[in-house]
Image 1 (cartoon, rainbow, N blue to C red):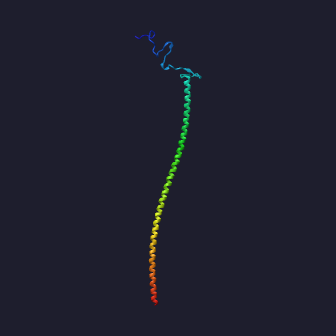
Image 2 (cartoon, rainbow, N blue to C red):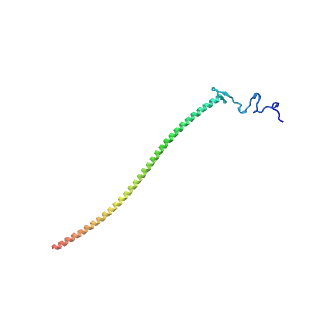
Length: 156
């Protein structure tokens, strides 16, 4: 059999109704319920609520500054990307010019070798022709001498 609550001498537990229909809630202890100037219910003390609003305003200002900074960073990244592309183009152009200069030097070296070979060929041909000329002049002198000798023999 269960003892009745009316006749009980024991104190009521914390989460049961007490006298005059009031409830005691441990989580609500220390809370002050107030109304603000717009008749809205406030659970937080006015000073803390004001601090919270100030903090919210600071956070919003900070978020705006971060957004502006992000925009600036995006613009900077865009500019730097453009400059990087220009640098890459110039680097490729410089590599192309260096390759052309190296190819030009190689072409000049080959042309010089070709001309030296042609000079050598022409020098050899000159030597051959000079030798042939000397040989023909010798033959001509011998033939002139023979003609003179034969002419002198006929006239005598």
